[in-house]
Length: 449
Image (cartoon, rainbow, N blue to C red; front, top):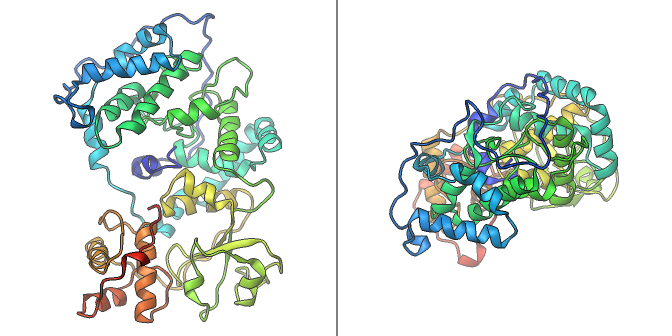
């Protein structure tokens, strides 16, 4: 799920999968108490994994075997049984290929309208609505208990795994322990590995069942292991929290995570399409700027059909995912749940827009003319120029995350251009000139990419 999360933003193949409705797979019947489980027939643990490099620097030169022994000891200290450690042992192997994928991942870079056309289409909304009807009891229960609308849950469910059709095909423990030994995000993945062991110890999944995405996400809404352990609920009453096979468990657990992990506000909106006038003060269009709807109404913002906004104090931000000539939305407090689920602005906006479509909103207006987009090499050049001017844009990769958008807005204000955070050829031409001056460090505005 990464969603929520930096991990998922990098897995574009998952985003581009079909939204066709998958048939539910019946949950397996397990004996109780659960014995130590050997690899299932036809599902052998990978044997020929590449050897780990000698002595990772971040682990004081410990070999992988020594590191793994310490990790197991830590897991045992946190309550993981020896039986679970023995069951998991065939899968706790190092795989350099997983580490290579993590280091070489490409951040998803489509523009919003292109991504939304593929992933938030009429067909996607109708498929999700059919899924809500299919599991109406679980969706209604989740909304009553957690305050999360069915459309919100279904949008994540469809985007993350096409309702269970795309779960990944790699052993979770192998992925997690390999990334735990690697130095890039070692501490995070050590916690995730132990959480996965706790899931096994609790009886929710066996080690051999733990198959998922390459970075260790699990289940039909792609939870990190820590989120699985902390937020998964047994909604079908079988005594297990199975997010791989139980649609009811997926629905209840996703609602629990959104409500309690992402702090969803019951009864409040998340995203609504609007129309902004050409004379709007574009510097006010930013997720960090919150104004009452009454103020946006005073500034000329209306619903797409020209109807006035409510004259109330509900705070919102004007979101322009493609600048002032592209679609415009009011993003409410609940939109933060989307950016927390996955900090890619394109993904989070698409997920929120898809949820609105599932809930009955009409399709968004298409731009009257194609929105000009700089090619990747020029986006990278612009980021380099922003860095030279004293701004922190994160990684110079041509992907305009929040840091880059913040820096673009600042330079647009400097040059007297419409400050809508959208990188343009005019801004790039201005910055190629000799007049760019480094900004004082105190003006740098850190934000999540």
